[in-house]
Structure formats: structure tokens, C-alpha cells
Length: 276
Image (cartoon, rainbow, N blue to C red; front, top):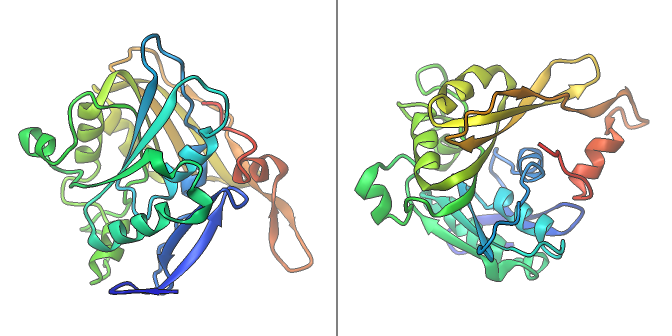
């Protein structure tokens, strides 16, 4: 399908059809595995006197991560309702996020999603004025860009570059904003390339504790390709390195591809969590 000013739009489904997302048909960046795995790390702990939990998806892009969280927690019997705010400042991504929220597959939870046009790197009063208010969130999730601007040749396309290339201050603004908008004992979840784990831990230092690192391995006896990391604001609890998840079987199928392992497939369908 095509939308005014958007070119050809491709519709994709995640969590075995429970989530519909809209993406540019000609774009290189595709929301999928990272968003689903990150969403699987989110859980809600009932809190006295708090009927609604708020999750903020920083740099949400087309909204895949936040939508997957909403879908996973819809109808689970938890006493708290979940409200999700998708945050981005790229016009193309915001337009696609609005289309994604309106997808029929998302109807069971669409009323609990809103979209905020705001820059994650803002500070202080400017950040608050943009709608990223102090202590607004129980959870923050993020899948930030991971290439250093000085080390890669980035695309002249603004949307494409923003999805992959960090700003001059790297990850620091992302962690700064996450800490600012989280409530006391609020939790952060993010996914990042495994080779960048040191940068993640540096960003968490002094702001978060109770860090849990959950590696995602492409195959058995292969290095991790991603890490899913959760942390708690201002906690002093120590870091935990968890066993992680193997994504692909070792043997190739008749089509020459490697199937998902049973545990990975259960997460991808929305039937299992990462429990971190």
C-alpha cells in the first residue's frame, strides 16, 4: 500500500500475528527480532495503589517494541493496565508509527498507546517541555542506534541514518533521559550488539543497578550477537550475567536455512518470556 508522502508501505506481523507494523517498503532498516526479544524482557510487578503502569519506548521508530510489549501483556490477567508512549522525533518514523498503531491486529490494545514527538537527547526543562517528564515511567525500553558517527559512513537519508548512527554524545543522552523519566525503582530494558556491552555498562554506571545481561547467541557454540540488558534505577544490587538464548539450530533445513530453536520460536510467537 502507499500513503501520501510515505511511498510504498509494507505491512508486517510480529508475535504470530498479534502485532501489525507498517514500514517503508524500500527501507533497509527492519523492525523485528530485536523488538520482539526486547519486549519479552518486560514484566509488570503489582504495586499498591498503582492501577496503571506506564512504559516509554525511547527512539521507538515504527513502534514495534512498544506494540509488542502491549500485545504480550494484554489479557494476561495482571491487575495493572499498561499505557505505552512511543517516542521519536523523525517525521517519517512518527508517521509509520501512527499507521502501525491503527493496524487492525493492534485493536485490542491500541487505545492504550500514544505517540510523542520528542528528541531523546534533550535535557532539563527542554526535555520536560517536550513531554518527557520526570518520574513519568515505570518502564523505559530502548533499541538505540549502535554505530559511532565518526567510525562509519552513514546514509544521507536522515531517517535511515538516525536508525543506525549515534549522535556525537553516543549513548549518554539515552541513559540520561531514561533515568530522568523513570520513577523510583523504575526499570530499564534495552537491546544492543554484544560487542558494545562495555558501552552499555558505562552508561548505566551511577544511574542504574541490579543489571542483568541476557546474551542472544546466533547458534550453539557461536558468539553472542545481541545482549538484552535490564536494570533498575538507583539500585545497588550487583550485576547478573544470565545463560542467554540460542536463536538458531546448528543444522540447515532443506531450504538451506537454519530454523529457530524451540525456545527462540516460543519467544517470537509471544508464548514465552526471557525472565530477566
